[in-house]
Length: 572
Image 1 (spheres, one colour):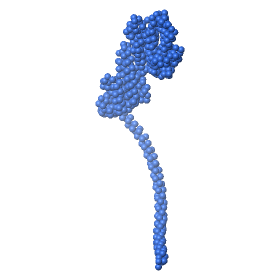
Image 2 (cartoon, helix red, strand yellow):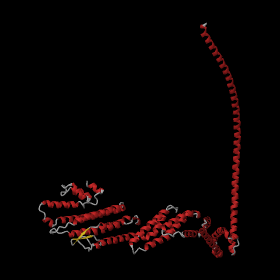
Image 3 (spheres, helix red, strand yellow):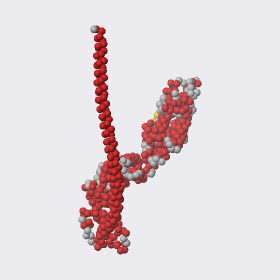
Image 4 (cartoon, helix red, strand yellow):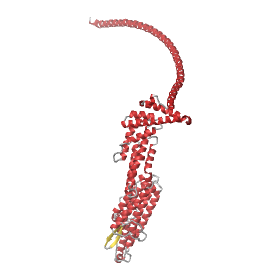
């Protein structure tokens, strides 16, 4: 009985499997029938949809044909309407012109009869309409022969003038009341009248009433233009022209009068104050011009403003450099003369120097007059005066030439009349080689001349070079400076040689070492005055070659240009 159990289980499983297969077959048949039914339904609906699409296409074709017919009809009607409009316009325009001409003839007859009856001429509230009519009648009257219509022409002209004056008065009143809309309305009417420019003049005049009450006329002008710039576009159809005319009026009347009052007061009596005022006024005027550049003044506002500035200052700038040079010369002479007087020194001609008006330093020592280059205060005053030259007041084309003239003046007073005269006087004061009295004060002259000339060289590089660097005057200035340096170096060398050869000194020398020491001292003194390019060559010369480098360095440190890059490049 236990051997049949596996067989029984297998049988049951087989039977269960067959039953499920049968169920699946039944389900498959059912689904297949449903699919066939759906396919048939889909095919049916597809045929119906295709039929509807065909019907819609036919309907669309019919609608498109109707649209084309309608479009053609509309185009036809539009053409007819345009043609009809042209015909109506052709008829209406001559009719309007005829009506206008009839009205003008009616008004013309009133002037011809000498009695103005129409309400447009008698009613003050219709001044705008009256202005339009009289402006047209005025144009017509100009075409009529004078011999036959002189009287009526005169009446029309008189009415034209009266209305013009009334409109300007109305504009003036509206401006005072601040009625911008009324101002704009009246200005538009006056635009076709000859008096329109007078209307602009009235506006400009009234804008300036009460605008210049403070001491700063330039600031007042800037504020006024800023205010008018915001308003003028609301009143006039050409605001840039009106604003430009206002600015022109301010420059040619207000500023020109102010500048003249400020400058003429000192022009002949006080050159220093005159030049200060001229520079200040010119600077403030150009600053005002820069502020006005932000406004719309037409096509070329830069040229417009430049011409206005030139019209104010041309009479003062034409001879500016002559006044500047004259002032600097008198000022330089006064500075040196004042110092000269303080030392109780009477300048005299000595050697090749002298003959000028400048005065170098004088020191009193041991009852003898000892003349040195001296006082850096005096020299700094001279350099400061020459640096006050204003390139703003020079025409750009004249700037290098004017700068060269200032430089030549500085060379004359500082180098020739001051340093060179001191060197000549110092040379004359050195005892002769037979003298028993040793005098080494010329070495002070050497040191001071070196200090002052390096200040002069700094002035040259800082102030003159930027003005002439791209000009042919550069080579001329450099040559002039080179000549003056070489001239002074010759005199400095001569003075050092003569100082070292004085007889007291020579008679006290017992051995050759002392002579060698004086030669070395002479060479060391040369380190103070030689050009930086030659410094290394002097240090390696016969007198200084064996000298301690620290000693050489201590002497070079005494030079004013010790820390300059040029000196560091040649002395290392």
